[in-house]
Image (cartoon, rainbow, N blue to C red):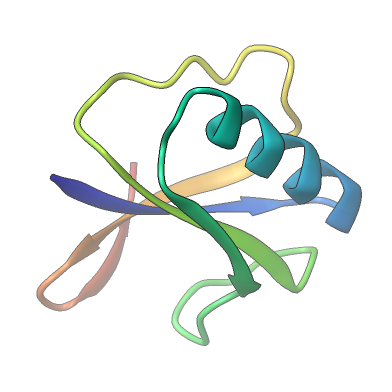
Length: 74
């Protein structure tokens, strides 16, 4: 299962996306943005899934996949 970090322009955007994932029964958590990842907002959503996520309608700044070396932008 792949682990991702999604960053946002605002805390509200992060909360909205978090609620969306929870509604889809995808394990997710709100957390501070990792130092290796740059973001406008200091809050990100960390989640794990193998399913394709439709980001339409969500103000996502960027999505990163966790790798052995840190994070890579998707």
